[in-house]
Image (cartoon, rainbow, N blue to C red; front, side, top):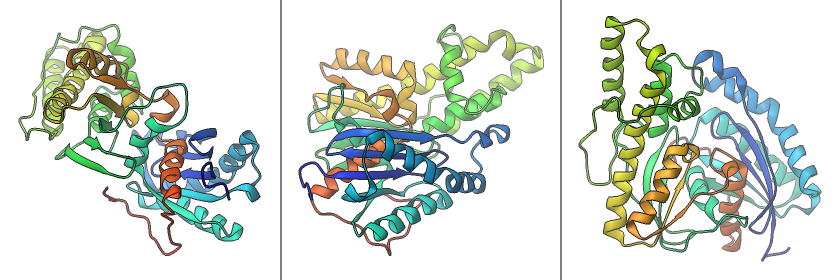
Length: 339
């Protein structure tokens, strides 16, 4: 067993992406993901359909990852999987497969928290620079919005999080209100590039110092469009770019304001973003502007590690492997798993 550079197979199946990665130490040798197009016609992820698609995708995706990495399954030293948070059925597929494969190979299993995986994706050995501890990480996805003080690879403190909806959900709901195809977040980002971000304004929630709230913003956005559509039923079509730019500006500025407050309080010198929404071009741009303003260094992982992927599960598992923090076949998935 190579304790310094273990070869780990990682599996991510928390939502609607089936992903497998092979890592040697902190280096990702392969990171393969199968997306599920079946949800588009429903305007959102259907849990039962997601579970069935994972069952179809998991073996081919793992096979592809092993082949691309040039690793035989007999060379694996551990298998990691996402224990939660996520959709119960989806987590069950990945967890059950990981346990079964680990038992057949007589190697340990490693349980990983999905959100910690997003944060630790910054430590993958790649072309992008890694932040120095301690650093602040803004984790933004469809189900979570958090500001986390990362003290080490195993010690993290949530300074604040959303009290209702996540930023990613706000993007997708706004897109759905405008009748944009699912997933709508990337389409808002695309259309916003040609729009005026200050054309329209929306309600900003007044909550705790580091907390977030996006339910009021979604309601404000809905009522605004309903009012304008009564006056002109072509309002969305005629103003799509400006609407997208404005709602994106409202969401991103809320995130950045809170992160700035956290920088001022913690005095950290490194800041980062993680999670699916970290792929948003406006958020990425504003992070670097904030870093310049606060004399900190900004970090964003490679695009492939922003959305749900097994590479991030593998790097989290790597640090657990070094501490011999192995799991049990009796551990059950936890859709609401906390840090």
